[in-house]
Length: 361
Image (cartoon, rainbow, N blue to C red; front, side, top):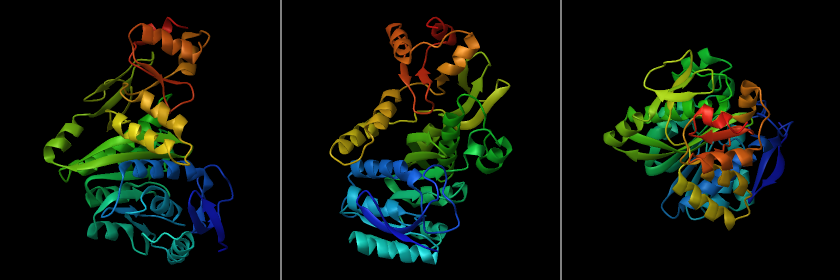
């Protein structure tokens, strides 16, 4: 293993760089660094910074590898909070210790434990689960390890299962059916969010999604955790099945009603407006460059589930694709919600019926 001194944001750390700057990193070394995941780490820094985690708060980077995420949380987002940076691999543990010393993160501590055992023993205000592959084995313990009002962050890189390429694998892992269609990435994020919601409800814990998105090779979900069977029951009422009729129509039902369906999944809000407002404020005073993504997420908050893909509709209608800005303006003038979505380059989030959308083609 050949590690190098690297830098990202305010962190200096030791790792073996990935051979590519896109897609998932190789698992040949436990102390790997994947530059393609920098955006994910930027979002973590922004969200935790906007939460104002200060003295007395504990954050956990549970599967840290090089430790870069935890180091950045310690120095950029929460310099007064305690940040535990954990990895069960001994080489990664050594690299994390060196990174803490090199960065000068006095509020960070290295840990060398199995994450599931660690989650059973401790409580944290922020828990980050970022495995190579599926997070399913860790979600149950992670949601229980969150202090009330805290945040659980979960990454899944098994997008082939979540987004419909391997629906049987998704059923086995997430107890939900995925669907490969124009809405596949949003459905994958909602399946992951729904899995975490159900895992919390088993323990009378309400884990409410506040930010869910898909990017490149991974899906990422943040949930705010609160106690109470009543709160958990309320979230379960926002679970359902996504149904697609083949003509562009889509709706949520309590049971599958169309030939093309996915679920059970989280059918509620993927983007919490108050959280994103706080993140935008924090980002404006930082060195982060997330404004474009934050504004898109904020704009589509409050919109209905299951976006349309304008390119797909163009083929369906056998008509030229209108400019997105003109299409959104026309729908808004007609009284409908209409915004871009982060889940697809030509994605449109709107509550307009398909026949209303067709008028602008």
